[in-house]
Image (cartoon, rainbow, N blue to C red; front, side, top):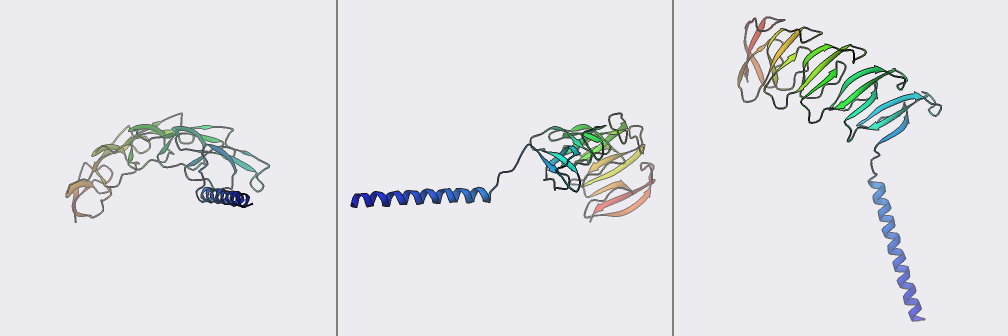
Length: 239
């Protein structure tokens, strides 16, 4: 009887330990849910997770209120995707083409979408978001960009201290406009800029419409033929 009681006691102990381990594993799994990847279907009024895009849109009886469903796709690990024009556009991606499609109910327009990681130059449609640190080096008419008919050549300035850019370009933080001039390579404005990156300088000459780096002030100004559009240059210095 003593042996039986000992065996029974040991068995109960083992069962309790196993139950404890299973409960702990279940709690850990609930505390750290795995991220869903790939593609899934949602109703159009549902929030779209960060980093996901809408790859198709269509009528759906399963979504009362809007009557529209989306197919959404995770951009992680992707290089090229076709997305609907109203899709969120994660940072670091550009619109390379625009075209009519029956796969995007609501707009009827899809975009070719491209990840520019590790690239220095890329062609993109003019409605594209422009990644931080990139500039528009040229613009031109393009039949691949339905909606605007204009495409850009984009350039990554990560390795540069000077660059040529069209006047509609976003100017990266810490860069200034040192000259502007007429250019047939910039469809839409016809004006190009010479851009310069402030690094260790304590003074510079810029066009009057140039952004001023944080902590810099204008020390003088004067007429200048190098600043097409305003005809005025500023001498600036670090305060």
